[in-house]
Amino acid sequence: MRKVASIFFLSLFLTLNVCAVDNAAIESRQLIKSSCSWNGQELPAYPEGEPQITILRIKIPAGAKLPMHKHPAINAGILIKANLTVITESGKVLELKAGDPIIEVVETWHYGQNKDDGPAEIIVFYAGAKKEPITIIKE
Image (cartoon, rainbow, N blue to C red):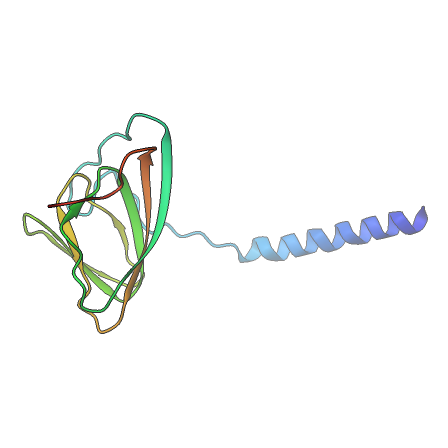
């Protein structure tokens, strides 16, 4: 019994010390916070229905231009590699570099273009509703 108690207290001591070290290393930095998209447009209300979060990691090849599209759902992301240019149908332009966050336009036609020599990568979080599209391509 004494051996079990010793092992328990040793485990507890080690766990508390590991947690203390890990907690000391925790950092939190706000990248972006807004009720507007990057073009200054107010974000709409969240959609009715059963909520669904979608997270995509999108790779855009060097020199690629995405088709004109829009998002009915609020979405935000962070460019993790290369540079990316976002252009709305009305001609507003946003230049992103690796590490930049973006609150994307909603219900606004736009496209992205990778003008770099290497692939661009962006992680995007969509706050939509089940059975609703997150992207609509303009025909």
